Image (cartoon, rainbow, N blue to C red; front, side, top):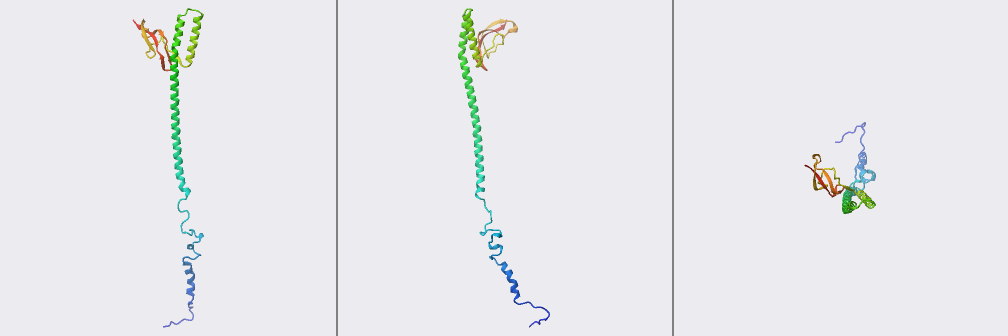
Length: 206
């Protein structure tokens, strides 16, 4: 049945619906050159589909390895320097010990010369010869003193078995008991080392 058309109501154009829908359909169609999905560089993503900056570059991968290697090298260097310093200290201690031992041995070997000069002075008659030998003997002992030689104190000091060797006793007053009263042979030391103990007579209270 045909619907009557009112003369005052406008009727749609049969060809207008297709024309109105045509732009929307064209905008929604994928692959067109004008849309964001068409591979335009201005659209954001590169044409290959991979996002920019994805994955580490060569420099980012190499830097941590180089830093760790540098740290290991510095630690090895510091350890080597510490060991070198310890070795230096050991060498210095050994050298000082050897030097002191050599000095003490030399001083000990020269003590018999002092004894010979002492005996010469004791046996010589008073005069210029005796005085000359005494001067030489005193000068010789001063030179040895420059290298650390010291006399062991004896007469008037308490007997000390560390530096004295008792060769006899003599009666003394009670207040001098254990005191060195005379010296038979001089004793010498160098620093803490006793080169020769002094031979002495010790007082004993009667």
